[in-house]
Amino acid sequence: MRLSAHVAQAAVTSAVMTQFLAPVDNVVLFLSIIFIDVDHYFDFAVVCKRFGLWDMFKYHDWVWRFRDNVYGISLFHTAEVFALLFALGFVSHYFWIILGGFLFHFLFDLIFLVRHDILFNRAFSIIEYVIRKSNPASKGYPVPDEGFWDEKR
Image (cartoon, rainbow, N blue to C red):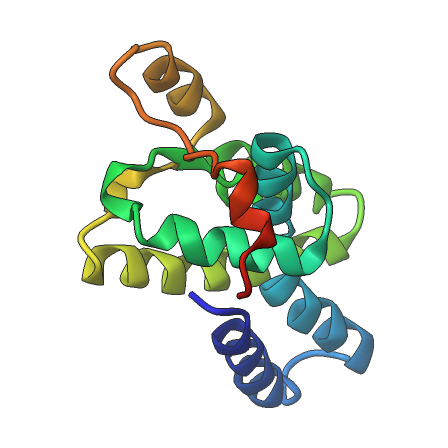
C-alpha cells in the first residue's frame, strides 16, 4: 500500500480512538500505524546499498512490477516483532498501543496482498524467511542496474 493510504488509515483510526485513548496514546497509535513501514527502508538500504528516501520510493515502485517473482521480509511485519511488542507491553503500555497499530496496519496489508494474489511473497516470520531463503529457487528482492538510479522517476 502507498504511504498516503496508511496515513489516511492512521488518521481515521486516530479520530475514532479519541473516544477511548488519552491524547498521547492516540499519537503513539497514529505514528505506529505509519512507521511500521520503516522496515521497507531497511529492505531497500540492504538490497541497494543506497540511503536516499526518494530512492527508496522509486525502488519499491519498480519492485512492484516484479511482485510475482519477489520473496522478501519486512522485519516489523513479523510474528517475532509482534511477540516482542506484546512482551514489552508488560513493561510499558505504550508497547501494546504500538502493537495495536502494527496489527491494524498489518490487517490492511494482508487484505492488499490477498487482493493482488501475492500473500506468500512476504515472510510473516523471521524463522520462515531464513528457512525459505535457504532454498536456491527462492527469489529475494531484485537489484536494479546502476543506470536505474539515473532515470527520472
